[in-house]
Length: 440
Ligand code: IFM
Image (cartoon, rainbow, N blue to C red; front, side):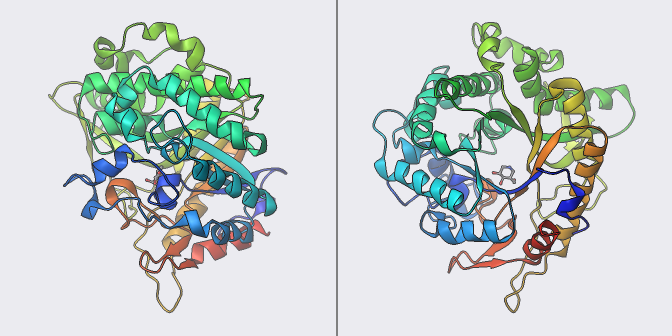
């Protein structure tokens, strides 16, 4: 790696991130069915119809996984809690095995000196709630607040930080407009409702945790830099709209109590009644803001219905996901977010990393491409700090290879290789390089 820990201000935190459905093994421990299980079981949605039943079997192997986090020299571990593991039908009676699991996991982090950084929801909605309309139903804010109370009532006393929802754009747009994630809808009315309700649920969970006396609560947004395909006003507008519904919608909702005009041109007619009255909840005070960053997109206008644009392939080198490698976007987002939205509030990079076509050869994975990707993005982070951004930490996605949603197990994002037949873990060259950087 072309950096070392001592390049960063004292107290700057490095972490590794994962999520429940992607690693735990949803078939274990009495978890209830989720909308991902039925989405994955429907032909055409997920590569080879793979699901998270086994994942990395982190449910049983969590101690060795946390040993790896600690041995790399990370300060924090960002994990998520599965709603359906805690409340198998989404509401009502908790699953004691699920609560016990997160209790053990928390203590195992603390025993290793790792700061537990929880995300309450990383995309596996309990099926009975999906049957009631899921994120389209306003009641989800209350259901989510109840789940928050149940899980944080058990482990909240030991959390370093908590964010309610990972990547609201994916919950709203990707899942209800593009249909790439569960529940796989392609409907603008469903999208408008989900985009709003996900923020309402976020704010309700923050209020619930404040009621439990918890501190260090945040929000985590994924961001993609939007570049116009050319300098025409139409292309510039197309990029601004992408930026609007991908990035600014959530920041404006939480930090400014409104939604961007260009987004409301399309979503406005489909919003749920009374949405304008929800910003007191949505804007509940947070203590930090997290940014998940991977890539940029190039946008071209078209004559289709709103939003009237499409992505075009960019010229930069790409990861295994086909995503352009564009570290400058991370620096620019950190600076823009601080300048336009969050001011002195601490920022974190809560996810950054790449999928690579990794192979285990003689017990070694030489993932130089990942070392280069991480080095260039950490350099961008340093530039943002030098520009005055109050950045407090950087977390790598992901600790280990895992279930990459609609792309199944084939895209490898891990610092640690996982053999999905034997479940054997092997640290890759990038893990070793990070370990050395973090000790320096
Ligand atoms: O694997 C996902 C994760 O669940 C959320 N952020 C992006 C990652 C890579 O696609």
